[in-house]
Length: 424
Image (cartoon, rainbow, N blue to C red; front, side):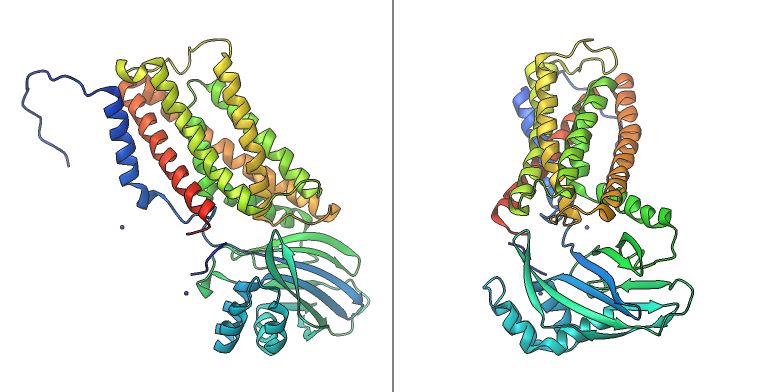
């Protein structure tokens, strides 16, 4: 269960008699201790990107001059945001008291004016530049998405009578924006059919609106950027990729590992989009954290098994064994298995738990392409630098990889504990 929120160069040493090296276990423990000491600075909140939210909007035109929007909003976040926006502290007290009790509709009904005041101020619809006037449709409801209560709000925006030309409908959402201080990076996923113009859009803090006359490639570009940002700004998936890189001896290893990860998460991501598979975040998020720790710890264990730590050297990153060993195949299998879970995590970032939608599928594919492009860019930048370090200073390269892997292991285990306990 989530809980909402209520910082030299040293002088040349004088030669000293040779000293006996610390045992390998002691040095490994020291690396782990160093990583653990850095943990508070390394580890962001337990969730993948801190507190984020996804708003769902199904937008249609039941009449030529009416735009109907069915919104799905996280109940607890709506209570907090609406209560503050409309200066209604009683809604916060009463709304949170019934959270996850099944009695949420009671609080929504009692404070419907507060909810509608907030939503209509943060969701705007225009037709050919003219504002449309919102009116509620029916009662406020509750549904469940991935086990989380979501409020359902339906609005009809009455627009000026359309002319002969196709109407330019624009939808703008600043629901749960960053400046409220409760979440960061809200995404509003819009599935629309407006006067025969169909498609999907992803509204974010950076691109809060879309227009039906906007070129299709611009709308797809929003999903591409969203996917790229999801990997680049998502520390858990980024650390998993780092663990794959430092644990690879040669280009072949990292290419095969990254390919296995890509294939696996693409499979579950698309199956989730088709509505074939789903898994609760309470299961997916801890397993993602555990996968980070396991893949990073694998590198530490491999170095220890090969005796590289005691010898202070590591196998040549380019001229390693030509054939994949049994251990290499097993590593790829592990990466593939964890990639399947990460795919569910990527799907969860967009809250994909609905039946298949053709209008959304292409957008999700572009989102996935954005993830892959950033993943390849990270590998292309980090792995050559690591290879260069291993060639120029093998010992420094060895211990750099070890400390990175140890740090990622500790962070992964820390996140695993947080997510398993539902804290943070």
